[in-house]
Each structure stands twice: as C-alpha cells, then as structure tokens.
Length: 115
Length: 115
Image (cartoon, rainbow over all chains, first blue to last red; front, side, top):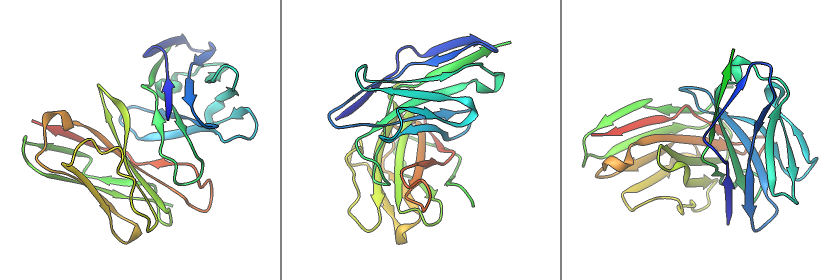
C-alpha cells in the first residue's frame, strides 16, 4: 500500500523567496512520485514526476523535486516564487508506472505568494 | 489536441436523486480514471478502466456508485440515491497515449452539490 503525507495545509512566501513544499511517502514497493498543481477553478496539472530515472527531477514553471529514498521524501522547490505560483499543490504516489497506475494523493498544500 | 472534458461542470441535485457524470478522455488514451475531491477526504481514487480489461473498482465508496466506459472512450459515473456526503468535485483523468504513457491528464471536474 502507498500513502503520502503533506504536512501543513498552507504555506505563505514572499514574491522572490524560496518555495519549499514537503512531501513524504510510504510505499511497500519502489514508488513513482508526482507533483500536481491545481489553480483556482481548474483541473490538476502535472508539474513533474519521478519514475526511477534521475533523482533530481525538473518540471514546468521552474519547479524541481528531489527523490531521497533514505528520507522517503520528494519535496518540491522553486528558487524564486512568482505571484502566479499561488495555487494548491498535491503530491501523489503510485506503485507502478504506465497507464495502469492509480494515484494516491496527499491532502494538498495551498501556496500563497505575498507581494 | 483537445484535453479531457467533463460534463456538466456543475450539478445540483436533491438527496435521493440519481445523477450521471460524463467524461470524454483524450483521444487514443487507453486508461481512464475517476477521482473524487472533497473537503474532508482530499483526492480519492474511485475507479479505473484500462482497455478491455475488467475495471478496478476498489475505490468506489458504496454500491450506489457505478461507472461504465463505452467503446473504450467516453465514461459515465453514476451515483444512485445521492446523499449529502456525495457532494464533491468529481475528476476524470486519462492516460496511455503515445507520449508520456504514465502521465494522467485531468479534466476540469464536475462539482456535485446534493441538497
């Protein structure tokens, strides 16, 4: 079984500051890990994914995440926040890759960006 | 090409009524997923279809929920005798295209409100 923990429900940063959104996972098999973003009144959009290749994964909009097996973590970072980054972010895990991979999501974190 | 579409975008119904939610996946995608997003439970997997295989119904919360996928394309999620706790956003995703087979592409969702 897989599970994801996203501590806290809300993170607030100043524009230009570092963004760090934490994600820890639990998996009985090697995990495949994803970060999705949801802008207000929109569907989920994939930011990046880890599927057992490079442990540092770069995604869209300047985001990246590092898979750390020893820490069972997959934290999302961005060096400099923009106002447009304000959204809800979900970390997800699946046990397999390919099309037959149901996702288990964390509770999500709302990111606010202050001017 | 076109993304995943869902209809209706909003549905308000009375307790005890049946509702049908529709999902049009990306053309050519072999896998289709339904998830539910609610305030109390976050994002939960409901059901997934893969080609002609039997669907994985392990996430359906009760026998009032059912889904079908006709012709390997359009899917309908049906909720019978709706209850207030069924109020949520129902998200559909598809995957399995020729590019990024393991990436799930989400639709905008149907917001269901049960009065």
